Length: 477
Ligand SMILES: Cc1cc2nc3c(=O)[nH]c(=O)nc-3n(C[C@H](O)[C@H](O)[C@H](O)COP(=O)(O)OP(=O)(O)OC[C@H]3O[C@@H](n4cnc5c(N)ncnc54)[C@H](O)[C@@H]3O)c2cc1C
Image 1: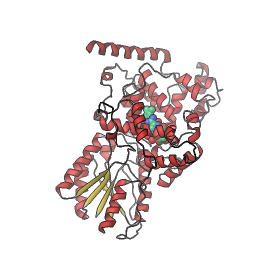
Image 2: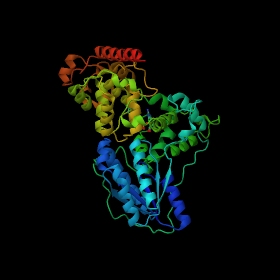
Image 3: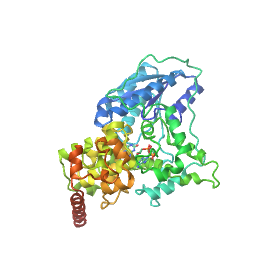
Image 4: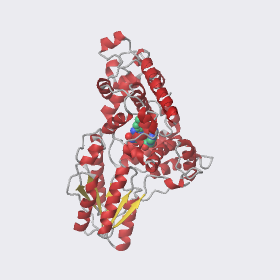
């Protein structure tokens, strides 16, 4: 028996481990099975969101039916922690006469250690392990500076990456029914531990929905993406991130859809300039960094000096930020979008993270954890990358002196206040000027809080702290 171990790759399409396990099984006349291992305690430690696990439960249930239709049974195993995966999987392999295990790799350190443990344990009992790269469109070791070291800056990495992308992406097809196996109907219902209800109306958790969303985005919105992607009131981005995070669609499938959408373009290769592809590149860049700089998986900042930045810690302010009650309408709208939908627009993630780290001066890793606990698309490399970028502690991060002004950003990216009106209904009666910064009287009348911090003072305090840090570091070196 060939067994495929699914993790953050809950799809049939373009799934190398599943594809090659089935191909090998067909050649050797063997059956195939699939396992998914729950690790409740580890998920808690990693701050995995209940809504994301709800989404995964639903995705796995659909996948279970699609696999059964091909005669492949999905087994749910329970390991509690990553360190238990090796014995639990070994036991399953012995009980089901498994001869080989097939899986797609992940980049964070704990996941890599878990996989190495499984490999070692299975090798001891003569079970082969086959692992595949599924998240990189260009192999990370093909992307190095002239000195032979990993890139630390996005733009040169991106220039090298885009040149090496395949001109005709070829995603692997979904497996067909194996002659060794008969179709069945799943008998058990899948429910992952810690799973919570999520907005199924917004995020139907099927591969078909992911493909439809990608296709529709490329047919209708991709050419306006540059103009609309920063406006939260417009549905101008793909909203595919939850599907990427749980692996219901691959980057290679998206690359193919992008390339197809440029088919009639008069300039060959013009798809390489596509701005949406550049965003998918950011996802890959953060994975590339996490792979090459393991300290990122250890909760450390990329710029180690920034550990010494003097921070604040005010429980009241943190609670207000978490609940969307900071008194800054755009920040509150952002946080409430997260709590209400499990997703936040990218521009708002940047504003909210900048507010938390540069104005409130709270530690970026607490904000990172809060996002992770609530995001349907919680993705460790992208979330860590986004927070470290915003806090100026990361690789190729926003410069330390760049501090977003929440009011002017609000006026720029939500000019008529329609997004704020939707998310902060108590302000909906305000005109499009005062909605970005209501007067004291308006706040009192509408029962909306006063600002938890004074922007100008907070900005000065933050800049002073960074300057002191820079001085301290220049004395030390
Ligand atoms: C503080 C902060 C935290 C973030 N946390 C996450 C997270 O946990 N999970 C997550 O997927 N993204 C995260 N992002 C990146 C980005 O905000 C989301 O990927 C994006 O908003 C998803 O919406 P979309 O699918 O409509 O994106 P689109 O604009 O349609 O982009 C397409 C895809 O490209 C990728 N992408 C786009 N922008 C980025 C980016 N800046 N960094 C990495 N990948 C990107 C995503 O996979 C996205 O689905 C974070 C950004 C910040 C600033």
